[in-house]
Image (cartoon, rainbow, N blue to C red; front, top):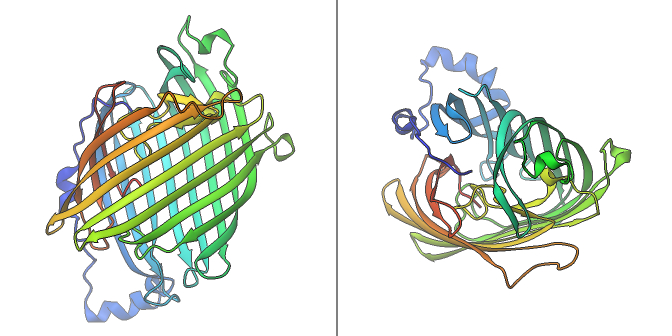
Length: 371
């Protein structure tokens, strides 16, 4: 997201780096063990007040947090789980409520990844494909539910089901813009309801900060009227990340992401996009959008001193459509650098600044690595 941004949560952020635990007396411990610690263990939480300013929001604020935990019945070596939550409100009366989480259960036998939220917001639109238009702002209200539920089959392989539901109601567009013309599919409303099959492989040595291994997923996600959608199309997706330790304190991470859409009537909100805080940092998420995208990105992660580290990253992406699968003659580039502050379980606080030839620099402050 393109940002002229002021983040004012760093004092509270640094004060909670050690994930301080609630202190209890010996007399209290027995009561807590029989109730709260029965289901979960190793629970650590950060809660942060946030203040921000975006061009599309003016000032906004709210509260956000993240918690890591393990299930008490799992072995000590089982992978930890993470949940994030947040509620924000802006001067423009915009609301964002979000609750993404990733959970490993029964000694990694089950994996659940979900992103649940409700948004009343506005975004920027720059056109589709290589046909750029002057920046347009549009207002939208929508719930979004994305869920992956997978079962381990064999050694570190998973098979599961994916679903996506989104009721995308565009409530305002700019007069004279492309969205106002009625020529853009889904420019006023779209309802996405998709169910499909996913396969994954996970050989990472650490969930939050891998030093070696891979994490990859491929899925096919049909969107169909029989599922409650208002149109039919199919998404093919692959996302593969690889991690290699170069030295004890230097990790090289690479990521390949492909999104390909099959169908003639795809709403613009569901097109494949380039940009954002995870893929091709340095571009507003959706600055480029088309039916197909392929993105390759790499990052060098170096621990410098104590909890502090630095990174350098770069990415290249291509777009395409039904006429040309990918336009390799028209690549898009981004690059940048960042600071990392490690927490107890190496769930890093991430501060990045990305650049591109197309926009001004973009600042990101979030929790967890981009990939």
